[in-house]
Length: 144
Image (cartoon, rainbow, N blue to C red; front, side, top):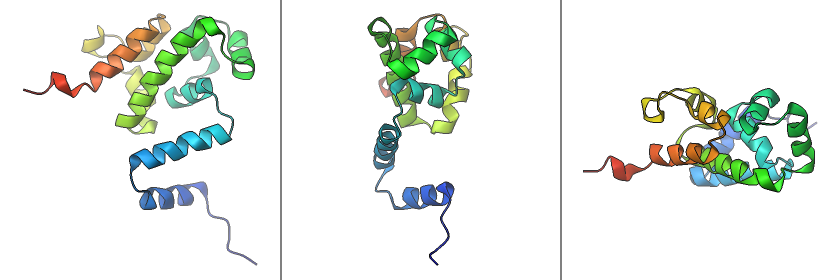
């Protein structure tokens, strides 16, 4: 009989310890998402920890419409919104731990007019979410 199967946590810890750098681990995560058939929308829902209800409000559609997007693809007229949110998510993933993203997008900030990134997205201001995340990590604004 062979060795007992290792848990996903054990494998993940080993990969993290042996990985050449964080970028390699992120590339691995992206590839695993592809192999599992995750769409950009699925990755957004997962990273932001959104229910279908929350996500449907964010895109201004019904839950049923969002469910159709998950199986049949996002309509072309909604792709700019999804692209902005996915781009913002990728920036967040590069700078903070993935498990912290849901808290970050829900935290209200003075720099956002007292709103959270999620509230801005719910208001349909998807490009503003990307701009806000880009500003969060723009080191030029803190350099002397």
